[in-house]
Length: 63
Image (cartoon, rainbow, N blue to C red; front, side, top):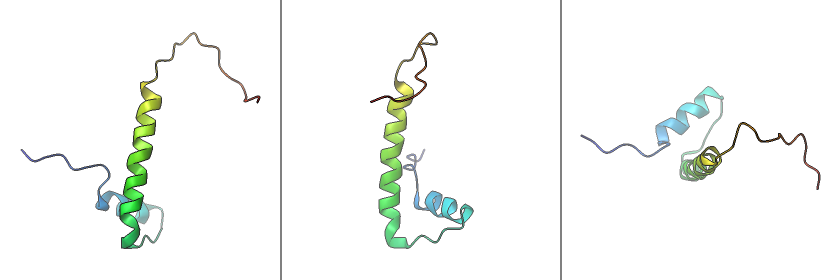
C-alpha cells in the first residue's frame, strides 16, 4: 500500500490552471500549493464548527 499523496499535487494545480486557461510558472507551484493547503485548513475549521438549525441567520454585517 502506498502513502497517500499530499493535497494538492503539482499535477492538480497544473490541471486546474489548464482548465482556467492560466499560465503558471513552475517556480510558483510551491507557493500555490502551500496557499491551497492553508485554505483547506481554514475550510475544515469552518465546516467543523457546530451550527444549530435553529440559529437566527445574520442578514448583514453591522459594525
